[in-house]
Image (cartoon, rainbow, N blue to C red; front, side, top):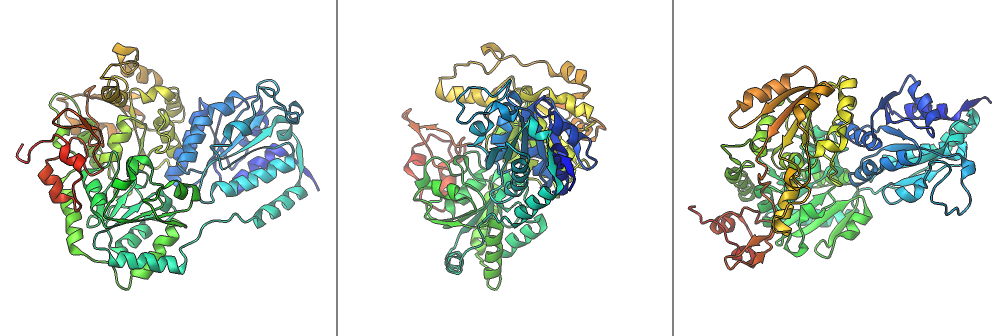
Length: 612
């Protein structure tokens, strides 16, 4: 049988497995792989300007399309630079195949304790083993090809996540027999990776009985349901007839069902969503990992009237949950939802009073509150609410962290095909721009709107050129809040408001973005208080090419509602439960809409009167 250059075999197998885009940066240790991928007719190589950008772009690519991208980086610093993106993908269950170049095999010694490998190499396995599903340094062409085949399968086996195949330069340049390739393919195709299925019959029976007996049940839907087509998922949830919350990651799973949708819940939840959560008598979390920002800090105070059921495909996520979460099922979220729909369709759950209560919560507590109104600054909350309404149905919003992340998560409710993409788990600064680039390569027919901040944009500023060089008609919002607004609020809370490294007066310098983005090739629009917001926003959205809309905010704007320490009338500090977000609502109103006893901490908080 004939031989083929190994790097060409890698390019072939990527294309054969449906990968069309590879993000990367060349180096001496991945030059063979780069050459083969670049000249493969079925692959598009996208060269960015930082390795973390490459992985973040692959993250955004998958979030937009549901298809996996690959990443090529070189040895040593190239691999290490990719770390932040890999951790973000691991946290968000995003499949990414990262192929790292490595020093030649002869540079490795058994049990070598040297700090470096060869000229510039590092021990990739040691660095990445805690933040990937699998990472392997391959010392032969057979091992490397086998690992790539396995990684392609493992990345997209629940729970999804990144894999790294580390390939020395002499392995890349070597040859592999075509017959060996076929043997390895056959072995890989017969390899079965066990995955959770649905609920056992007795588990399903117990859960359906509990739902039927509940008066105020609530679903909490997460991104673990992403594999279900939106129209089908909407039909399943609608058929159950049970009110539901969505995690931030699941905001855009399907168009909201107005009669059932309760909102978001958590530390930065909506008032309606948190009150619904704390009022329910049965809570079923499906495909969401119930992180601290969702469930709060005190488990005993979460949905305290309710029996809590959790469905997750990851045993580790179930094990981390304490005794408050006694009914836990290791199962596939989409399968369980279909099982419930089938089991309950003959006699759907119905309680009009609970449905009316959910509707009243949504109407009484709008997402944009009176505290978000300002006559002197543009406030991010009404601005993004309006932007969501003005943007067409084919819009994908991609956020960075900070103001953009929090505001979008709280007030954007994508509908009609709109999407909202974030890096939720790691929340790294610098994700927004690169995630938006990846989303555009995944589907360039969509309008990509990147929601960024003056601080976050600096973390991957170099990729502004990638937008221009690839002719991406990106719509880039920059919230200018004079630095790091979230951290200034943190400093107010924990160090008596002393500033350090969060604004120009305390050591953080942010550039003037207007001349900067124009140099890169962006058009520029500014939005300040007194401007015609609708007119400028529509002009921004309708621009032909890449354009920046810089939104000038109050440097001290509150990011609320949020769960935060409050002050009692006697001056003492009080930690309220999830239903009592800051700024607090009148106590009579809280008692009216919370279908549970008000806790002493809420009774102790200083708050406005009902007629204030």
